[in-house]
Length: 269
Image (cartoon, rainbow, N blue to C red; front, side, top):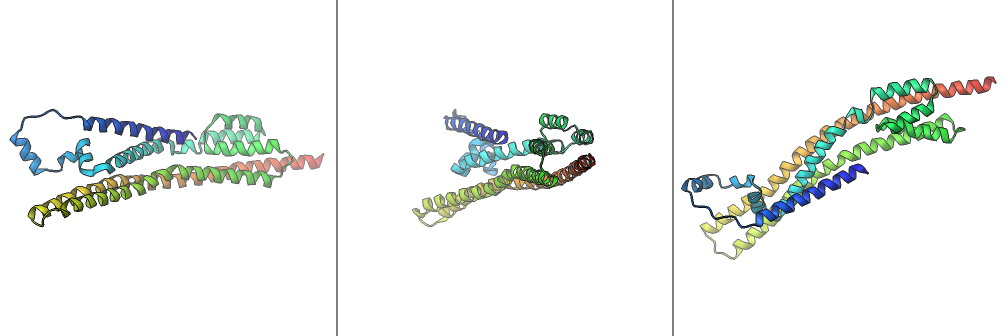
């Protein structure tokens, strides 16, 4: 739930930031004296103003704002996943050593307290297992194992679902860029259709198409890095899931030994 709240806050901040920039862009600029050198530089590099916010919005149109918001969301998620998608948040050696020692001592209440203090995936799986075992003392080991496997599958799905948002951004951004290009070309052809056919008409068509294609380029600039980082995080998550499954199997093997000892002790009485 807290990850969804963070994502919503990021979207809200991006919207507020974009609205502020839009308000600044709409303010009339002070008249500046004409400088021949600046004019020559602008003619040599007519798309140099794309690097500025006002120039980007002017040349890409209304689709500039969704693209800017998507870029901020992608950057936020890349930074967030860079800090959270790591081994310490899934399974750590410190927890495994503590769990191993407490299970061998049959101190399940102590292990449950340790699980409640930690925020790792393996801790949540162990907590769910111990909670079920303590609430159902007559449950067999197979029933406890099923609960553990179900919780493990749920934690794996949550890990994969977290990074899926970055893949969605990588897929949506190029489509928004293509939509902006299509809208720009429709507007360009509509403006040129009322003019006569000539050199100026063809020049205006070429300029309008080139400006419209900036939307596609912007979408690709956002989508390609997003998909690249998504692939990196997906491989890392799959590796962490494998380590989590191995750690769960180890803990369940220790619990199976304790169940067998308890069963022998009851049979010997």
